[in-house]
Image (cartoon, rainbow, N blue to C red; front, side):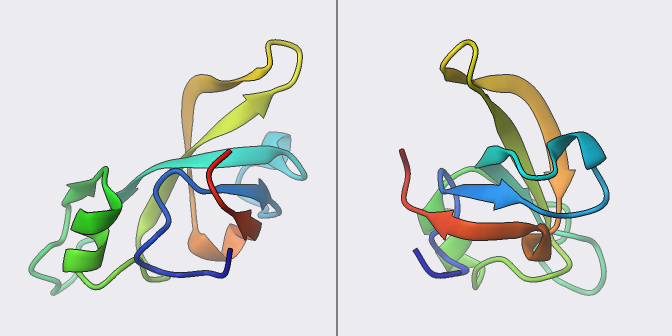
Length: 96
């Protein structure tokens, strides 16, 4: 999956950022997107669905992306959310 800014919710990626060292190299799933404040009429909006994301023009580098980490021992994604940036997600792929 390419970095389609309107089809991100539910996608799986590898986290390679520096903000959360404990996540580096781990598989994560995008849970929701939070629009960042700053002149945008949709600032602060929480987006859970890709059609809503498309309606606001997709995700950009200023938005916060909340992810859940894959827990291989339990064979599921965790419940704890971590906020990351789009540039921290690599190898984006389709939903599992």
